[in-house]
Length: 259
Image (cartoon, rainbow, N blue to C red):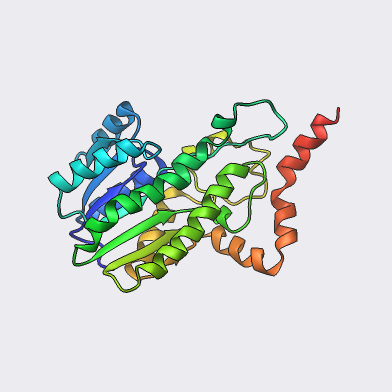
C-alpha cells in the first residue's frame, strides 16, 4: 500500500504506539488526525507534532463515535485510512472484590470500540479509491498473559474479527491489516510490575512502528513484529509450554494468597 499523501485517522493517538504512528506517518507526507479522551494529552500531542489534527473522542462511547464520523467526514472527506489503536491494559485478579462493570471495562475500549469504528466508517472508506483499516491487536491475541485476562480476551477477539473482516472486504478497495505488537515500551505497560515482565523482551516503540509501516507498505496483512511472531509460532508448536511461561506472574500471586 502507498503510505504517502493519505488522510489517516488514528484512535488513541496521544501517546505510545498511536503517537509514534502519527509522527512517522506524518513524516511520510500524510495528513494525520488523532483522537483521545484526554484534552490535555491531545494538546501535548499537538505541541510535539504541530502538523497533526486533534479531536477529543472516546471509542468506548457510541455517540462519540458518531459525532467523530460526522466531523471527520465533513471536514476531511478525503479520509482513507483508519487505524484502530486505542486500548487499555490492566492486571486483574478474579479473586478480588471489584465492580463487575469495571472488571469488563477493557472490552468497551479494546474490542467493541474498534468494531463500532469499522462499522461507522466503512461506508465512507468503501467510496475511496484506495483505503485501509488497521486494527492494532497484540501478540497476546495468540496466547494469553493470564495476569491480564480481559485485555488478552479482547485482543484475541479483535484478531478473530479482523480475519473475518478481511474476508468480507476482499472484493472491495479496502485493505484490512492487523498489527499485533509484542511487549512495547509505552505507557500501556504501566500496570505491569518488573516481576511480571521478567523474561519478556520489550521492543522500542520507534522500531515497532517502523516495522508496522514496512509491513503495510508491502501488503503484509498480519504484521507481527519482534516477539509477537514467536508467540504465534509457539502457540501452535507448544501451546501448553508458552502458556505456563506466561502464567508465572499469576502463579506467584496465587502462592502469596495461600499465606
